[in-house]
Image (cartoon, rainbow, N blue to C red):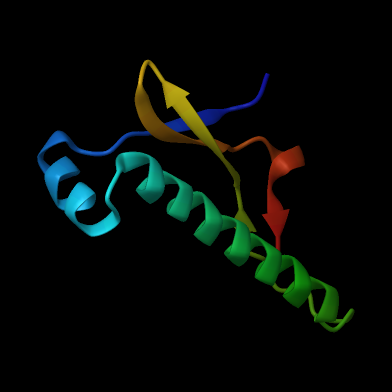
Length: 86
């Protein structure tokens, strides 16, 4: 079984987030979109990397959108088969 990290918003920041994004769902979805964009960018850079380069690479974890008991959270999959290295 893999390792997962559940991320929730701090209670004292909810009002600020709703003011900026309208809803907690919109904010959480935006966070997922940003991660997907960064992950895709990293994958493309990795494909263009010179073969002879052997520098350790950064890993992007896959992030999922979850409605958990009415609260919108993100879940990061930290298992190696879902991580993308660049």
